[in-house]
Length: 383
Image (cartoon, rainbow, N blue to C red; front, side, top):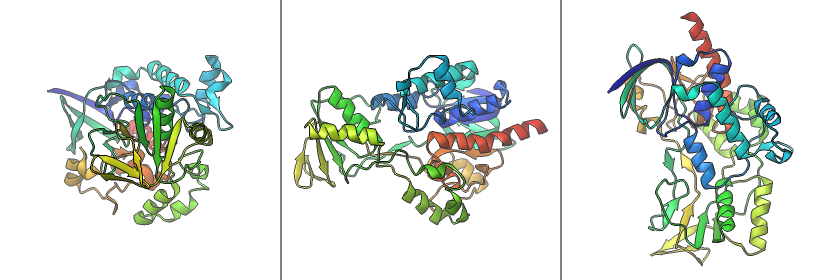
């Protein structure tokens, strides 16, 4: 069993965890203070795997949303490395995935983060004694401060009917052979990207959505990225139930940017995609939508991913040990700095009742860094 100590441990090496580490270093934190741990082999592995699976070309977020604390960093990177204008889409400047990933890699390498990353290590439990004690599959880490940035990829959501042997979630890691006829279930950005990817391979695609295709340039109205748009949200203060309803109402998980919807509609009009609208039901080994049989040789569910509740995760020992407060929906009660208790911070889906509808987006990682990093630097000055 390997033992080590660090001032700051970031659990999760995805976009949010990387953004927190980068922001800490860019604003004066020391590299030797930081450790990042993740169940995947390298930083951003899960992000790259998922975006590659659906063959995403451009992000949904704008040019100012990335892993750096400098809002202009991505645009400056593009200029320095002669990326053409096609790498920024529409008036919002949505960046190409290739350029975004290149910027991430250069930033990570320039700051030396690979040397402070522990991969292929799943966190099993966390407790608090004199410091936080984190147990992984192979090691014991003690840390003065912990940031949990595990995202929302813990649980893949599949419908109750999706128990056919030919059904799988789009982000499942299990190997499966692609078939000539594929049914893609879901109406959001993941489903549309994936349907287009399969058409490009020459496959026959049936797209099943619960409702007509919905256009939304972002995950929610852009006003929720600023204090003005969030006034009504913040006025709810500690009314956690109403805040949860607010976030559910304003987030648009089953929508896609206009260019992606138009592309799918063209494929539907030309007969390259068959589009069925309605609830999917199962009768034996056959699936039906609105009375029409759906090809079931291969069914790919693009039906979302969910975070684990703290009581079902590695946080449970700490939750019970310190009697940490939970909202009625089972999420942590965080303060404005995203602290659950002294020295323990949460980002992503765990922070959406503080940050609002964009907590899970790339913007949410940046906003988390703006709240957490000043606290870390203050604590370091006191040492």
